[in-house]
Length: 121
Image (cartoon, rainbow, N blue to C red; front, side, top):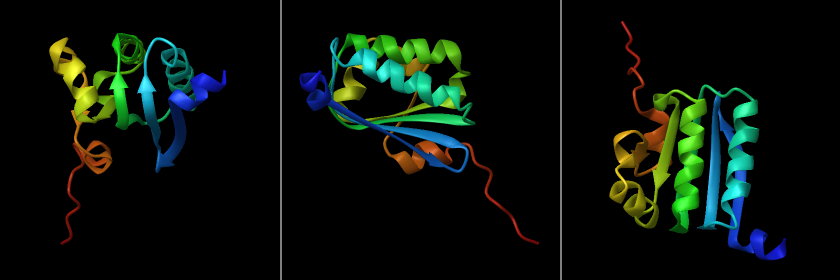
């Protein structure tokens, strides 16, 4: 269990009604079940949006891709957003999942995508 906790760290936080799951380390066959569990936990709170921040992930294997696909089955596509480091973006793009996953460069971009600018007047 200690090897797993050293490989990946996760933290759930909230920005208004959006859940932000921040992940760091490596997501592989050993740590992917932990990622899936954390996503399921976050979804249990029925967030308006789930942002999985993988910008601090150095390795993202096929097991991680499967976890994201399972999350997509649970949520509408536009309600799951992924902040991807280059190491995460590469396998997502190579497998063509970028066509169905909302990929973003920054957490701010993921949280504000699609917002209507407020107008005064």
